[in-house]
Image (cartoon, rainbow, N blue to C red; front, side, top):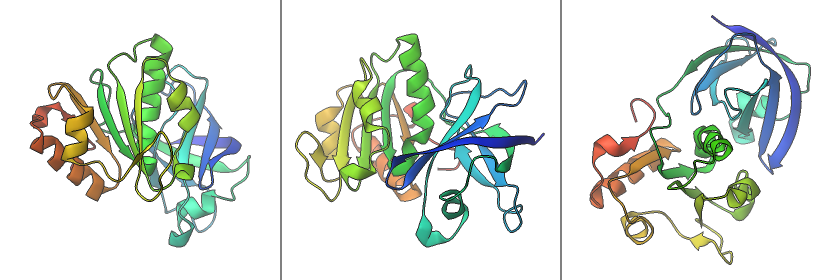
Length: 223
């Protein structure tokens, strides 16, 4: 059953990513890693629902989404770039196949990190980050979403990988089988992947190359 939400707050996180905070409907439940469809209740956008991942936690009294803007697409995220508090949305969900199946390696590219925000925040709140490893790929350092939060999470191992920029303390290049062999010692743990479909396919292939069983890989349905 769809829920009506009112936008409370918009705040920038990076040059092209914002945090959107809404009131939470009564008796609405979800699990870390899940998503919902958001529709802007405005002429021209009522038939354009888009899926976004919850970045708030199940016991928070508000709903939060971290959303990257793609102005070149002239679509919903471009409209969201200039949206103001007080705007009404419709929410339908939750859904999604990415869930916390235990500690492991979280492989993310760009905005694909969003399902892992709630999962890792929830583990941080529980003091259960030991054995969790985030390998986060971006183009430039300015693209890293929540970098300070990741780097400040006690017991979380973090490797930032930049494709087109060399920065002291960060990796330069791309994640492949050779990178994984160097930085991942246990191929029997859980591996979570989220990002563009080409990235997901490449990571799945790389994990297979280093001997990870497909049963230990978590992605969205159909990917």
